Image (cartoon, rainbow, N blue to C red; front, side, top):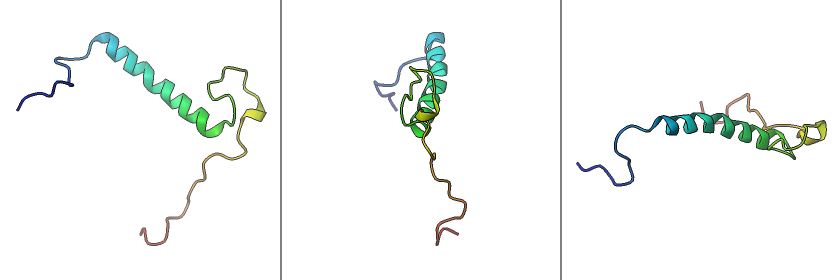
Length: 68
C-alpha cells in the first residue's frame, strides 16, 4: 500500500514538535477564554470582573431520560 502524498516522510523535526507542544496550551487557554469570558478572551486588556460571564456552561448532573 502506497503512502498518501499528504503524509510527510520520516519523523517530524524538533521544531515541529516544539510548535505543536506550544499550540495545545494556547488553544486550551483560548477555548477557556471564549467559554467563560464575555469580552477580552485573548486577555489583551487587564482582566476585570465585567469580562466574566455570569454563568459558564451548564453542567448536567443527571443523565437524560433513556440514556441509562
